[in-house]
Length: 268
Image 1 (tube, one colour):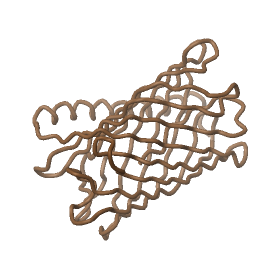
Image 2 (cartoon, rainbow, N blue to C red; image 1 turned 135 degrees about the vertical axis):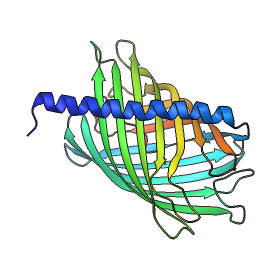
Image 3 (spheres, rainbow, N blue to C red; image 1 turned 180 degrees about the vertical axis):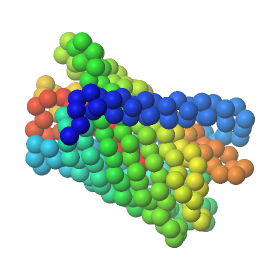
């Protein structure tokens, strides 16, 4: 078994790695954005609802439904359904796996689906490691670091596409009772392989999010968040990139929860 100091070093290296990936991501985003003025923009509304049900003291089952509205919030954009399992191996470390079904509808000036098709289905299997650590004298800071691997099976694409996602998020509680909190985070998406008529091996997407959250009851088992999410989609070749500016409204329900626990959303 690893000693306490060794575990601390591994934990620190993981945080440094996650932070380094996100810093490089933001720098590359700035450089690429300066060199390309042809960027499509869209206003969207994302409405994820997540239910986390404890199966045992260490195992939790989850189900998320997430409708999205795009085309300047006038037409349906995507629908996501995500069942999953998370197993806590330490108080602040858990392993997760699950399935995701996603349908994307073709919108005006959208790169989500080819113009000859009205919609595209995608099935995903994912595995992740989630680190959550409270910091500060009164534990008012919460650091979330998630590493996720996805196997994507996209309609009309014969081979599976593999993708790595690295999320770093910070929450800051407000007030003595900690009913309110603010958050900021960033997630990098890296395509690990190239598939014909599908994703190409490269840096493919970035998401930046910020907002405010509130626990809706004294037991802190139900919380809502409202914020802004910027989704930067990188197009291969000479196609224009896309910036989606989304209003993010989330509802998370944790039945039988006696202590506050903050987890990231299983956004696709």
